[in-house]
Image (cartoon, rainbow, N blue to C red; front, side, top):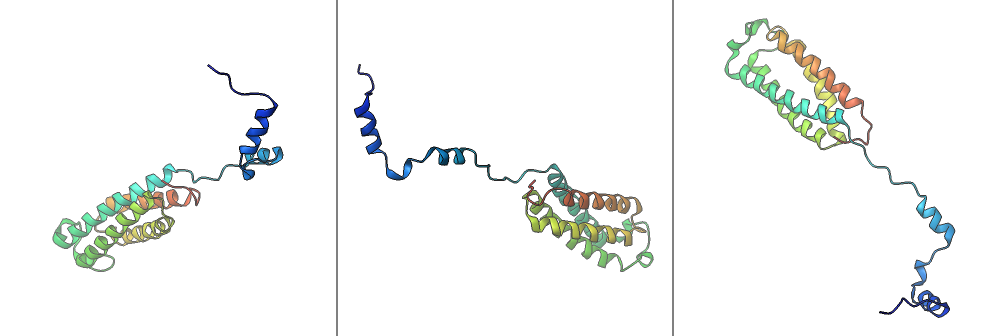
Length: 164
């Protein structure tokens, strides 16, 4: 067994073998070691909750839309007693809104900023739509309005750089 070479001759050989750009002054090495870490986007449970809730409410709106189209007698009031439109029109509105909500909910779960903005707008539209649909399905409409307000809060509270 041989011991590692030491002594003045070895240090000179080691210095000559090192590339010129790799040796740094001690103060440069200290600055590099003390450099702050790059900021990373944090995760937010609120965004995951909002994304999941938007997808769920979107699926429920799709079901409401299909019910309005195929079984208008399911609801508590006649078509003429709705605040706005008739059941066929509401069916198409809920169907379209539900599909868009499901897509936006997936976007929120993936941490997309456009999805957060669209989710806020869609939750507000959904709440307004359920106010107009209140006579046909009162308990469910009140529940969806409350969930829409919760979704808006969950999308506004986290930082812009947060992801689900």
